[in-house]
Length: 340
Image (cartoon, rainbow, N blue to C red; front, side, top):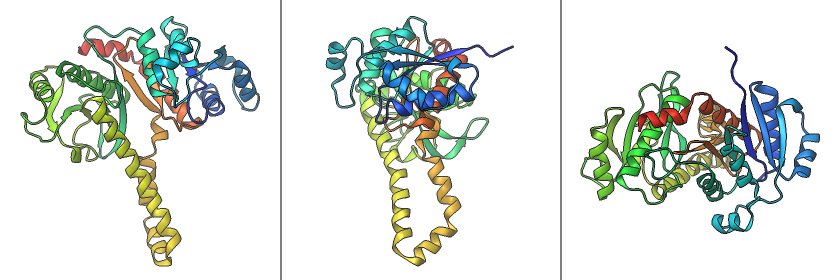
């Protein structure tokens, strides 16, 4: 059976390098993925100019003009109120109306989540959406020994109730099964101790509920030190704590690479030592390269939104599109609904 065509709406104006890098990423998809169609939403003149400079398959790309956009520094609610035709909001509407199957944006995270909240519908049983993100771990997961685990929420819901945390666990497990091909992912709550009674009341209550959940392989609480070890395939927390953890994990990889570069330039003996460790350092760099895993899904809506990193260039945008298409073709929303 032929793979069905999937349309991804790209918020072209968002991100540090839009619109050129977003257009280039969509152009890569048009050449590499025959079942994908890219709907580019943003300033039509800027998009056409970028397409004129980029090799692409015109049959798999279309353009929807949006006269405004939300800058990275703007307050999301005020910006969307002042700019009802902002590119991220127009793109979200197109997805909600069925003109596209998923939304990809590297722009203002708050604006993207708010645009989704205003146009998509929450799944029954979900009170708050969650922004999930993969991160590198020591051990592999799933059939293909995926080196990444998933943490959620990392920014969509700052304060989460026990029921929110339970819903995040179900959504995260469904995403790990479909995207990471992990048939039975382990799920844990992030707390300040591994004992079931450790943590604030909402975490203790969520632990009790998850311990009796028949559809999850709940392994209890984990501490911050367990996150990079890969102790659990899915780590559940609220958006404030999750965002702090995610930024720290990103910083670790970048710092290690910077220290290696400094050492290489400082002494000959260090340079020789690093030369012997070059394969291991390359593996570390590849493992912590956020561009290869595309973006963070916003889970809990009936439609899919993939939030790409603000610094995304073409390769990362293309990978975000591929992740979105995989989630759509695998009917991620239905899988989450069944779990709930």
